[in-house]
Image 1 (tube, rainbow, N blue to C red):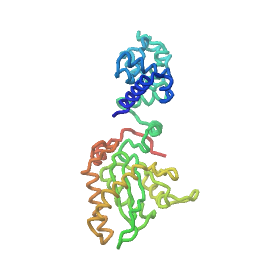
Image 2: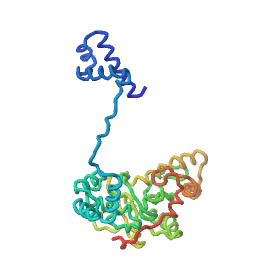
Image 3: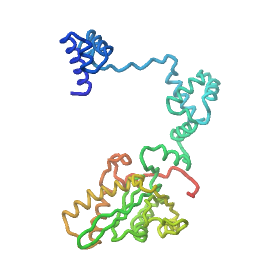
Amino acid sequence: MTKDDFLVSFKYSVLQHARKHNNVTYSCREFNISRTVYYKWLKGFSKLGYLGLQNREKAKPRMPNRIKPDKEKILLNYIIEYPTHGPKRIANELGQQEIKISDTGVYNVLKRKSLNRRLDRLFYAQEKSDNPVVTERYLREIEKRQKVPISAYYPGYLFCQDTFYVGTIKGLGRIYQQTGIDAYAGFGFAKIYTDKTALSAIHFLKTKVLPVYRQFNIPLDRILTDNGKEYTTHWVNGKHEFEKYLETQGIRHTRIKPRTPQSNGIVERFNRTLLEEFYQIAMMKKVYSSLSELQDALDQFITDYNFKRTNQGYRLKGKIPYQKFLNGKRKYTLPLPL
């Protein structure tokens, strides 16, 4: 029984109760409803029977003065060309083209389309343009507006890196994993170590990550990490090996806010995939005698993940990571990041 069916049944039982006891006041008190509501239900039942007890959706109000769709389309096309113009200016300019729309009518359309703010119109024009020139401000503002924690617009725009504690494996000791993933394409990387130091984090970039980006001629612009000691120093004006290495490579380093691991959620989700689909299964099937043997098995899984496994997430929507990693285009030309 659906919720609507349950409500109809309840209303009918109230009417039956009142009829059985021949006392509307008593029934309303028993079912904790007002007499007004009771008579409303009774009126509906008298007209349409059982169907009269169903909730009816309110008809949308007719707006006789609402701008016609063809004029609305003209107005939206005008905004793409002149996003900085306000309602009065738009109405005047369209009037010169013998398209009669009042400034109030223009504002109502802008309000309905969430374009009543100048900045919103600028971004609307940006998104609808055939050849957009994306600016740093546009990227910052769009990232603020995204419902997802992390946004990326081309391969190499943002690489998310994290240290993941795998566990203590008999014969191998404590195992840590340096994990990374391209935030645009979901193209993943992973390498295991016996420590969580800056040297391991740098070694991971040198041996696993940067060679792949260079192989496909994809510049890496920015790396996002947490505030772990392997990635940054907590001393004011202190120098850190990991950050110094990124400076030599021309890569910006961004850190998440303290105690907000969800800010780097994409790599956290990748860690979970590796744990559930690789480690938990691999450890059941085989006893690994060396770190290199475990790394070989991990490399094979990562290769399958990047080149064979489809991803159903909102970024890839059924694609394989390499398809987006190799087909992504850098859509803009900007000054070098500060």
